[in-house]
Amino acid sequence: MIAPRGGTGGYWIRPALGKDVTAILGLIAPYARQGLMLPRSEGEIRAGMAELLVATRPNGEVVGCGGLRLYPDDTAEIVSLAVAPTERGRGLGARWVARLRRRSQALGVGRTFALTLDPDFFEGRGFQLAARSDFPEKEAADCRVCPRRGSCREVAVVHVEVEARRSADLTSYTISV
Image 1: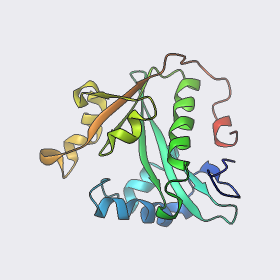
Image 2: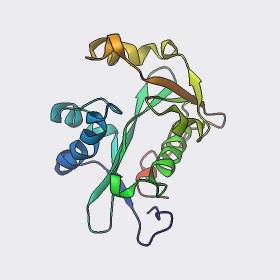
Image 3: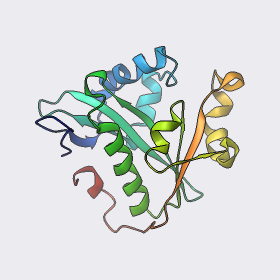
Image 4: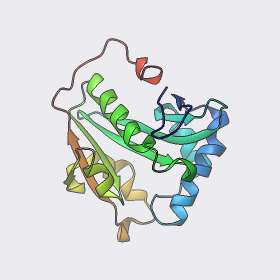
């Protein structure tokens, strides 16, 4: 459980389930309408379910989502990071990024990156600006088919995981805090 800054209660972090698709779409859609995230379809969310986690209030309400996509070259990408507007400013996004970085380290990943329209958020968490061309796997998988390819404003940020290490228990991150 992660306790929110300045509030009571907490957030439960768990793997995303099929029943969460509508809530995940609801978290991403407002940011997509503002041009801060790429829109996602139900099919895209379902296809990436294995890499997504959700944060819920104790009552089960989904208030955040995000995940880690692994690439074969010792690199991982933070994907679909979104927090409900009602939870913004309470530290959930920052703690989520820290958790995903710890997950990268546990998996022995050397670099964790994100493509973002808010590089300041990531820079405040130890990431550095990078060239998008440093991540050819991402470009091959997503950018070549993206509708915004010719006018993309996303910036690459990267964190080199100096203490990357293998973990024997690859599922413990979803329940430990």
